[in-house]
Amino acid sequence: MIPCQAMHPPKRARGLSLIDAVATLAILGAVTVPIATGIASLSRGNLQNYRDTGVRCALVYETERLRALPFASLSVGSTTTSIDLPGGASDLTVVISPADFDGDLAADADFKLVAASLDGREIRLFRGNWVE
Amino acid sequence: MRRRGSMSIMVVILALSATAMITAAMALSTGSATVQRSAMQREQAVFLADSGLEHAMIRLKNDAAWRDGFSDVPLGAGTYTVTLVDDGGDIVITSVGEVGTLSNELNVRVGWE
Image (cartoon, rainbow over all chains, first blue to last red; front, top):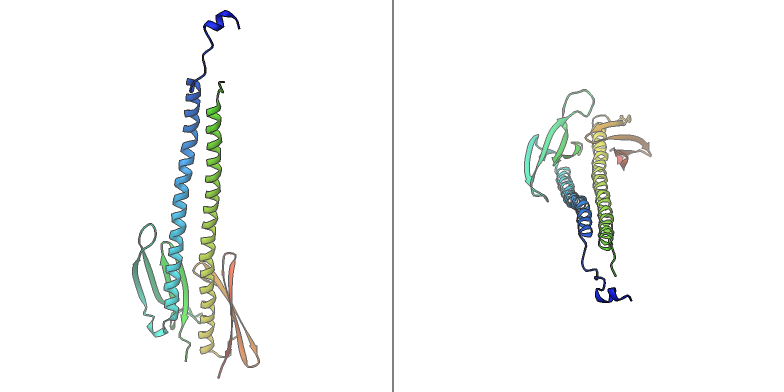
């Protein structure tokens, strides 16, 4: 060791240099925004999937209920019921209307179209009065 | 000993790890949405097949000799196709509901008195 160094030993590196800090902050800033956006999108996607499950279950439940009713109990008209779903309530609308079964383009009293819709999804089915 | 840039490298590694995990989770979420869509279409196909059966039964009630069936009748999100085959005095009705690539088939044997 030369005498000069013995008197003034080199400084030890401590902490971050300004360049390190600036580079780290720049990288953090660059990756935080897309990651946060991804997490937000993921959260919205999961909520939408959960809501879609609720919509499907409510629609199937209602359509099965209408399918099980006696034909005479299917009154022509429209009904709307509010359904609680993940992310907010929505209206379940059921429309029952006479339909044409014999191809003469005229609606028949013994054939009905049932359409249940909720949150932009819909299930349709025909019911016929064929039971003796 | 000074290690220049070591903090930045750690940040990059952490960011890459987080990005990979989020990408994987988003892929799972997207897959789940696809499953949801398919499940809805499957339910619609079930009701379409049932509708075809109802349609055939009301036609038969009004015309016992009717055997024409239906081909790709549109209803809601899909179509149904119905075929009727005489079999030993009974009629075998096959109704297929289709929504997109998904389908559901119902087979019913009907005996008329």
